[in-house]
Image (cartoon, rainbow, N blue to C red; front, side, top):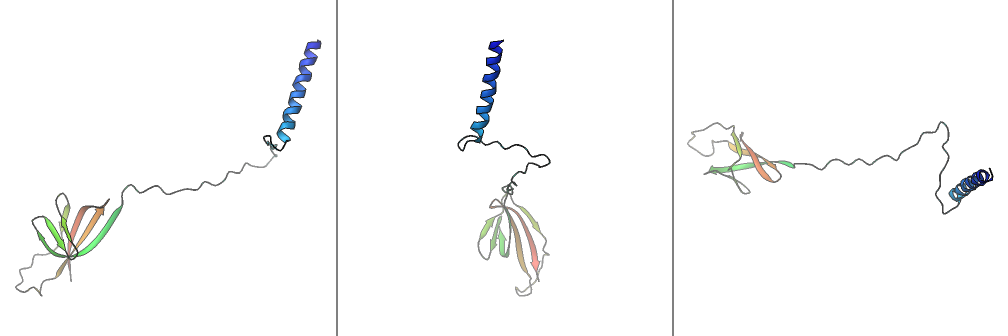
Length: 122
């Protein structure tokens, strides 16, 4: 019976010292839960996902198209493996000034030319 009493006293003292350690400045701080108060979390900063593909559309005036190469006023582009949609009418005009200008709407995906739509400009 004495042994049981000593164990109870030791457990009691360990509990008291444990609570005293929690209240000391260097010890862990545990605040009691207040009834009716919800635990508030810090709002998470949501980031937009990194773009998987960067798509860019550019419109340029067309000088000519020869042998699978598109020549514009600023450069030339190879049309190999590129989807080309030509929406222009074929004119058999005698003079150059009577023909409308053509524009190329180019779609780049990850800086690679993927699609070209050629239109007439009035």
